[in-house]
Figure 1 (tube, each protein chain N blue to C red):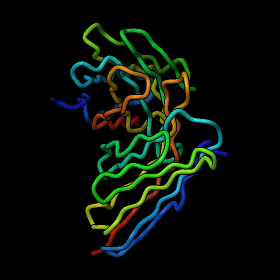
Figure 2: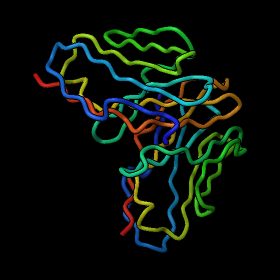
Figure 3: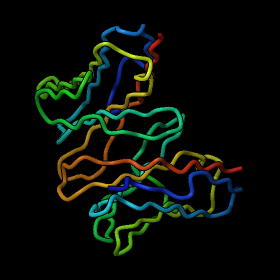
Length: 109
Length: 113
């Protein structure tokens, strides 16, 4: 079983829809990361959070430490949001990251 | 500030050969991490260097090695290439502080024939 589980694996939405991607992890972490990967491979770090909620533009990330669960929300989705969204965790005293399998999001106009 | 750069961007090698990939971190960043991404295994951590020292290593065979220079530029080397080493190799740099955000480079796509 992967240490980091994401759902759904694939997601297709119509432009303007509200999108939620979920991530759960199995052990205590120091931080949770949401990454975005566009075709071609480049990865952009969207959020790093250890508690609560963060917002950047139309993107919102939340984390519940007790439930070991995080969500990434995209409001008013747009075709340019189409990408793979990857959840990753980092652990105390370790400098590596463990990654979920990713959620492939397609937003249709 | 320039981002993380990786060279080369694409590489084709044959089985048994060795390869060296290069990563230049964001200016001022002393931590460089390397990751392998394959369709089957997803993203996996290879190793991290900080101030020329390997600070952490993932679960990869000894054919995978790396180093970091005094200017924080890092190289990773894969010897005796296997078909399964075909992957996108990503490096990321981080500023001071264990919990700082990582910035990823564009990756090197290695194909082993």
